[in-house]
Length: 255
Image (cartoon, rainbow, N blue to C red):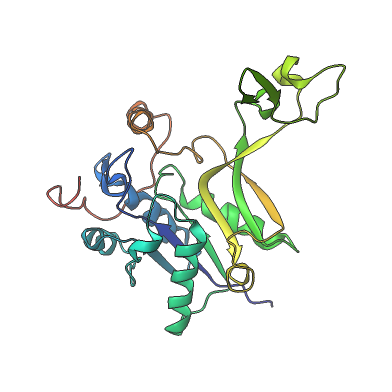
């Protein structure tokens, strides 16, 4: 029987968010936002370890309270607004490897997707394992604003972003339903073989497969309006957050 590859969950939770300050520890329905990603990761039973990458010592108690690890503080030079994911992912995997902890695969679970459940992770992991020849899996959903109707403006003129449509019936003048299906990535999850980081210095490699999120699995909290909508979704029962087994973290320490 072939051995199942090992996989580590990597949850990025830097403290420098400007649009929603300290959003990763801001309370949503009684728990810090990151608690829901940790809970889903642990409940899934998929991961050999659940690691939170943060640059903030203030976050360490929250991480520990909810059952995850944060063995290495992320250096400030790779924790800025414009720091690419490959920097902190490579830093974390390389530090783990130096400590004798190696994993065949990794999954990025961003705290800003609180409606991603353990079942979401299990479904994605099973799909990834069944697919031969891929470097990574990335969550996507059907786009609401079709790129065929997008423009690049240059002074007083503009040109279509996608010069692919037939001249006799340009996409910008067509009904949405008649356009080719296009998908946009969301922040729900990513899975990849660790070798794409060590050998190719990338988090996705060159061959990606789609993971189609359902319902609110791909809902992303990045703006104050998103936060209000997330609260409304919970309160109205449109979607449930992952169950968190721990008692709420002390409100005096979390926002």
